[in-house]
Amino acid sequence: MTALIERIAARFPDAIASSHSWRGDQTVVLHPANLLEVARFLRDEPDLAMNLLVDLSAVDYSAFGKGPQPAFFGSSGVKLGPSLLIPDESPWPGPPGKDRFAVVYHFYSTTLKHRLRLVVTVPEEAPEVDSLCPLWPGANWLERETWDMFGVAFKGHPDLRRILMYDEFEGHPLRKDYPVNKRQPLIGPVN
Amino acid sequence: MTDDKSFFTTRLDEALGWARKYSIFQYPFVTACCGMEYMATACSHYDVDRFGAGFPRFSPRQADVLFVVGTISHKMAPILRRIYDQMAEPKWVVAFGVCTCTGGFYDNYATVMGIDTIMPVDVYIPGCPPRPEMVLDGLMKLQDKIQEEHSGAGRPAPEKRPEVFEA
Image: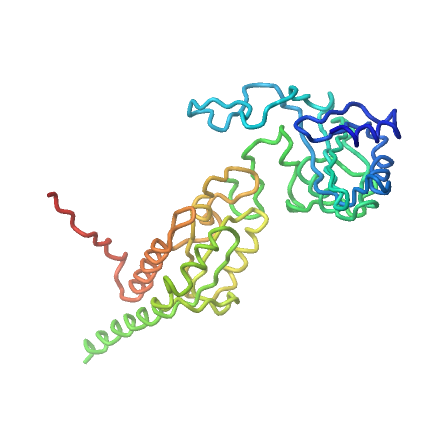
């Protein structure tokens, strides 16, 4: 289950920060500078043919591993653990890097039926990565959503503005330092 | 003679209330999953037409009752308020489902904590989603309210519940 990773590693030996195929999902953590060329390679190479950008989102790791784990049934006494149905061949590889954000891309080839996940780590000081809009037009709204929710900007995006929240909204609500129930109503009281 | 006139006036008010409560033109503002339950209520199995409310209008200017069905986000709140303002008097508002009553289980940046923070509400129908029976109950309570508004009385009489006998 590492054929795609090896294919990328052979073509771009310096682009890969790390890689794994935990639970059968081939994942490549890239250096941000190499994102566009690797993505273009994934799309255009006949034996990769990633013609579908399934999903694009971000993760805020700033609160990762700090404080108690917010268990869903935390108050009920039900212990949470890894599912017994999916045996782990190896432990979870952990966060992709030391940077605060990670932008995650999921690709799928509808002709060759294989998947790949790309991860690009983004530092807090300069939250910006290259836009994939020139390669997959479907990235447009996904990148706008990621900008809206996490404040990660996309260089080269044709129309980077909020898509879910209103223009008057300040901040990015899915960042871990956004207070969980802070509201910014357009009309009515701040309830 | 004057007594007869005043007697006639109160009867006219009652007739007006009767006419209004059995010709509710509703505006369904359906945003979320409660809409499925709203549709179940509106269709023939439960049949809100029995109560004279079977004729949804999709223009607020032609509607009497605003049914707010489903979660209202802060982005949508000004639109909902504008629709309420566009409705002609007399008008009533029904909050359908917990999200419109209180925000429900949402407690986050996006959701309005009950539409009564942005407009007056006449009937609250809780539930996630409410059963059609509850919706019909709320509709009948609204009918009582519309009737009482025009009979000179204050609040509708308390609900009569069936007596329970201990064996």
